[in-house]
Image (cartoon, rainbow, N blue to C red; front, top):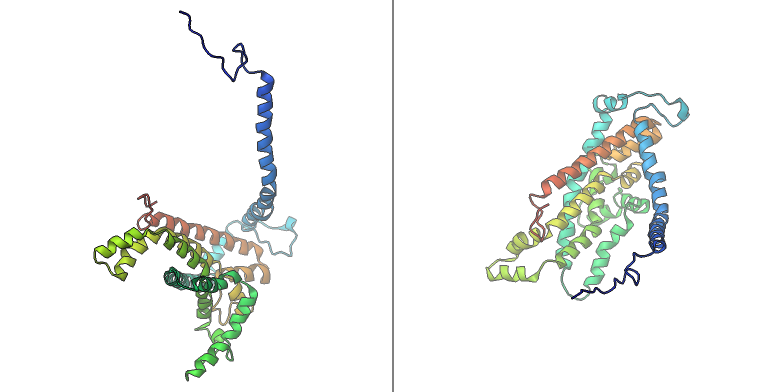
Length: 327
């Protein structure tokens, strides 16, 4: 008995292959879809090249030259590794800026994350008006590194500022905080810690994802609040903590606006607020040593990249994910 097969709907009625014109038309449609995607991406690609990629390559070249802004670009002289050698061996202000920046980041970032996590734990409850408080705590982060906020902060910590007036109510003698080399950097730290709203919101989102069953199981085992926090909350929040730690560390090293406003662009008093980025700005735009400043910028970029690599390399030992993989 002969076997018959049903005609293939993708073929012609006699089993012939689909017409070539149809295949060509489909190919043109696919090619058109891809072209449309590149057209929509073209503004971003143009911005990436014009604002990021090309300036980075130019600054890399300038880091090996003696460019000083006033010299025509055609007369720039190649000096090789002289800028890097000067940076590491003959520039004490560079290493002072590194120490100031490290001190700022190592103190301000952990305290900022601790404040953000503490407030997030307090606001992770369903009580009346909690939304208003969340908005109020997040508000300082909206201002970011604005010049206006830095000016207000400097005026608050002046000799006749609001901080000294408040201390005077308790019989405590104030001081010119922003003009005191021993306290000027600390005022910048307080400003950075005060702007904990962004990591607080991220911590809140992470706390919402912690299963309540884990807390119930811990309570059955007789765990108190501290043991629940240490054995349940922190492990479950470790990916969020890692995320905030990386972002806030990078932001801490990039601090510029407040230090610039407080010191009038000098890093004072007595270079106590000479952050790395501020020192780079002074070198490039005040001292007009753009080649040397470009070298500083590339060392800064490499340093931030190395710190990020260290975080990701060590994160697998303490970051716990829901799928059980610590990487």
